[in-house]
Amino acid sequence: MLLDLSDRAKFKVTGKDRARFLNGQLTNDILSLRPGSAVCACALTAKGKLCAELFVAATKEGHFLDAEAVLRESLAARLERYIIADDVTLEEVTGEFGLFHLVNPVSGKAESPAAALPGSETMNFLIESNRFGVPGLDLWFPANRADAVREELGQSPVDPETAESFRIERGIARWGKELSEDVIPNEAGLDKRAISYGKGCYLGQEVISRIKSIGHVNRHLCTLVPAAGVTFEIGDKLFADGESVKEIGYVTSVGQSRSLDRAIALGYVRRAFAVSGTILQVRRNNSLLGPIEVRGLPIHSA
Image: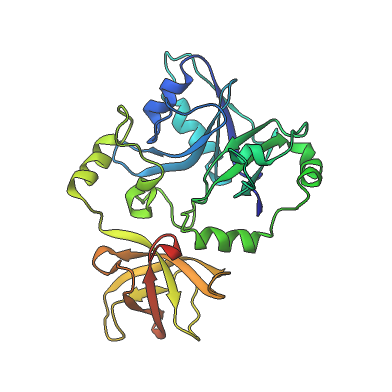
């Protein structure tokens, strides 16, 4: 499966202090990131709230960052604020690069995802990346070479609806849907893939470490599967039962599961109810829509 991520904001970070700088600004371990690979990370406020969720790719010439397009200005401002005496240059390169993600490209006896692709003159670099919780490749290429890359790969990116459903089925939180400045990374499951608890200090670390020692947050992002005939929309509210008036969660994204051949959703659920197999009720305004089952992230983790 090929996904087009070219509309994401992109930055190039250079300078001899770049790895140390990024390691002190982001939640994941950037110092151990080897060229040709990428990790998910978060930029936080001092209070542990999200400023951005992004991917950091390492190459021999620098580090490349990508995040949701809406974060282009705020992420740049957040990082530049702390470049003081460091030998670090942050350059926006959104318009220079296209970005495709190839899901699970390994075939045969290939030793790595990159080995599954033929040598390419159309791409700037290939980055091993598990953006969706499975092996994959990020393909960075000149923005005007998208057609050539598609021809070389022998396939075109899936349509936006299919890509969104795949994201939901894989349980991947997205900025503007599940992620915002009001979210703590652990609530969205980002602690499992975007946070290193063994690295050095970074902005917001104290709050994240305190949450780890406490052992829980008050809500969790979950997969939601409706009963037959039940339809729901983003923003629909979740309740413990049909009589309850206390909201315990809400729907953030809606898609279609290929494996289940039915609608699925992502949503936040209060901790006491965020247990796989729990049956909740969905309500829109004052109308009861029907039952919905809580599942883990991703959906087949249950």
